[in-house]
Image (cartoon, rainbow, N blue to C red):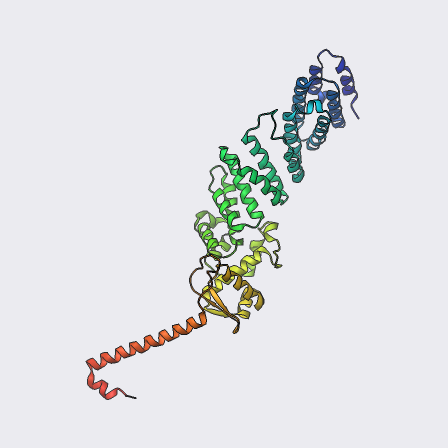
Length: 423
């Protein structure tokens, strides 16, 4: 219901010689003409009056500018911004004679008012969709690359808040085409952070760890935020597939003196030093992970569980020359078949060096680091290698004994002749 004072002012406005000024005056005095219980209906009524008054494009734009300023001044009115802003957009779209000339005003209402209100209400999906409708290709307004980047970054961040990494990546790809033209440090930072979050959300943990680690050195970020991104880098590195690339990233993080003060340092240290992880340590670490980092993979295990199994398998390869399927499964918390399968995949992917004897149900580990290249983890047949090593040791012992006998015979021929038993 429209307040009586406002209704009277709106009825008198068409009779004024300068209608533009009349409506601007009403908007400037809306707080006295209206009250909290009728403010929404009053602003909707003002919108209808403005667009039914046939002010012309220039005067309509001027009155709309005042209207937008009035809405902005009504702070802490998120729902009001959404309701009135949506009504203004609907009214503009139903007036094609002026709609094509109000792209600037439409962009402000969508981006600065409605989308901002949705963000404040944590309706991030609606905020993203509203921002995606902001006109960015128009001959009626000058739109810089920086303007586009500001909108696209907000869209990406809103989609990431609802874990829609697919939609977020679509707008990130748009950003990639223009970021080389942007010299705004804050926008560059938001772009890098958004890229890292998308990599993280898509479980590209190694790439995410590297991106977060780079951001942790940015001078444009507060110290607390730098430590937070360092913490995210450690989490992603721990969740990444075990192998040489991850070991390199773990090395950077472990040697960073800032890491020692973070909660994740205990896990980081054990991971870097290839020490076996206890279930209690894993459970404690899991409490600090995001939901997508604890998601279930195609084989029914979580991302963290898989990372821990692969790490402990690498740790076992440092401790044992060989081990049976069942014994390895007991160590990893798996059955023998699953332990064999996990080992086979890591060897095939070049993340572990060794071979599998399926007849004797044994896994033979080859010492040294794998290269990370597919197929490079397959070692020589380790059973034969162990036999050759034994033969070599026996041969070396025999040669040493022969040299010792020759030396004794040369120095003490009589002793040797008396003591040496010739078969």
